[in-house]
Image 1 (cartoon, rainbow, N blue to C red):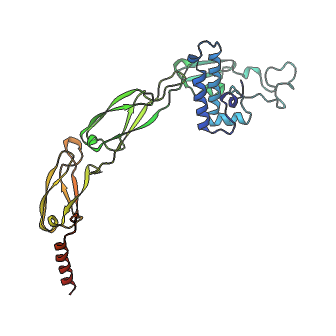
Image 2 (image 1 turned 180 degrees about the vertical axis):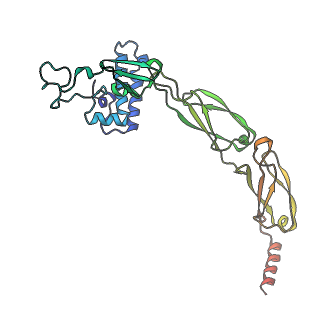
Image 3 (image 1 turned 45 degrees about the horizontal axis):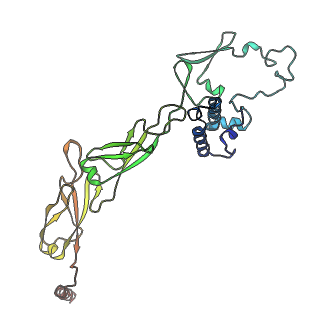
Length: 318
């Protein structure tokens, strides 16, 4: 077989990502389904797979670069002194110093995996005979065959509103393939929740099963609320008069506005708890809404208010 680097069209210094991209690019170009009129399409695609099997495996790539295996993934036969080859003694069977009977003559497949047998009857077990012959990264199927690798998984994100997270929703979502699916968002779904869509990932270039799509939920920024576990937080501005004299004020929640009683002489920064106005929890319960007050001065300057406060400051200083 040709040099795996030449087959994939990459330099010997290419990293794993470059090799993967090159393989995918060539696989789409050389796949037999896309070349039905080419009688050699299957051979070209098989050659591409073999090259990728070597270069995508760190150990095998190192063995090839060191000259220990050839482009088919088979061990290179070196002409060592004392072994067969050009310098072997006449009539030698196989390597000099070894009886030809020690070379494996047959392989059988069974529930214990591949087993090689010597003529002397001593079995040798292999965890993956593909590692010897160059197709070790494929999965072994029942009966000794090999199944093609599945397509790659994909990671996606879906942004939802806080109201959708609280109340639940059905969201139309477009996959990278262009296919649209409806995702069910359960009430109380937390940010970072990860959903699995089986078989909705990348298709396999080898005819295997498609990968999976994993969708992670993220929240869109909200104008009023911040989530704190099962609770929600919000800031509420009240006038100076309401903070000093006390008042009933309207507070927005995810399910509609409610009234909050502000006691007289309430300082800015005080936090009130509205129970059950937060996010849904298990067994129908809800978190709370935490309301922190801020003091809002009048939009226009009030000379009377300024005079009163100046009088109070002067009195406190004397």
